[in-house]
Length: 573
Image 1 (cartoon, rainbow, N blue to C red):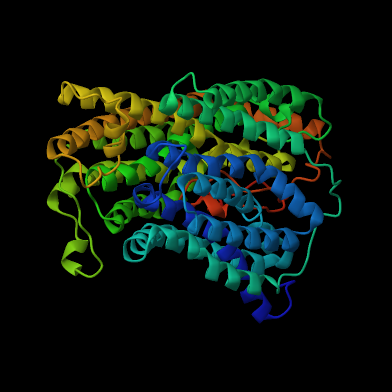
Image 2 (cartoon, rainbow, N blue to C red; image 1 turned 120 degrees about the horizontal axis):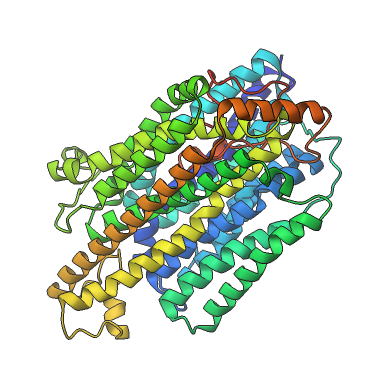
């Protein structure tokens, strides 16, 4: 039975939540494809090109991660429709600001604001569905919503490449505006709902500390490497990040309604799953961003080709997640938490062997014959992308199951909300690590190929930068050396990311308790705390990744644990 009124209202509600959750993911994917075009087109007065592009992706995720849990609580207290509509309007306004940004610095600021707006959309979809529908109708609507977001998962890289190549990178942001207008109009059919037990106590300090800790450390490391470790802003960022990192657990231990209850972190499996999520998803987000830069800026792929390359990953995720979830329900999640990241790492190691002379895929929508990849792409790129996709496909659902099994049912909402935030928080720090590795490798490699070249000369650095296309007036020998140096830097980044994936796999696969021991622990805890509740916070969905990220949303915790034979809405893209 639908609580939304007429069938027409039900369709409008579904349309609103699909758009609201879909645009955040679409924006992330399209921006990854657009990065090379952004760096080539936008001037940077205070930041170097790769430095600024790293802020464009990392800054967005810092703010999004810091505000996700808080936004869910605000939604429960002030009204889910009201907060969802506020998120739509804010995301539309910040998308316009991004699309019209005249400089790289202003684009970074607009992306920070866009991350805050996205945080008010992500927790909304499932909470609105749960409040507006019930029984079999709710299950049917969730299935339709999941199917729509899965279709977006597969179509997003293709759409991103087409938009950037046929229009411009600015259209990658401005395309959100008409979609948001439709979503906002449809959202007027959503009946208002809220959690009547919510107290209205929000941990603003906790969200600020998390943002300063992650953002400060990431910014300080990137800025220090780009501008020199004696740069005052770099030193200030590192000091602020370290101070916030120390202050965060102290605040969580003393505040009455902490953003991150330390009692959850004392649970071994919950801590292990979140550590694995932090490492694995951090490497995942950053790998996809640097991959788009390398394929376009160094090898010369078109934006459409760079988008098409990512489609096998999405297809693997869509086709393998349900089967992996069922298998994890039978044999446990540990083999998948180890095997999935190891397979992803193997894919990155294959990509790390790509030669600088690998032919560019010049896919053009006006020339159908170019839409098939050249044979060299099938050898140099294809196996690595496929391995990466298979590993991701067998990881996501078991990771969700391990997360849900690590806490009592009454804590499922808060646990999944925190894990969702953790999945984004790792990316800025891993991005900083890979930025340092790439820039530290590129200029020495360039100098080794062209002895006598002063790589510290500002004019040389204006001509060539890592993973980006040299300026037209660059001498041919410098172009060739820069291409080889960028390829070496990309290889180092992929090897580093592969090592992080293996580390995350070892943490998850070896760190989890055995199933019998975990079941005994859960039985004791549930018997000791029969009335425990999660207060103003409700379930915000299992962890996400770029291709399934916006399926993580607010749902009421059910009375029963999730059935491992049914795909979790947040476990599949």
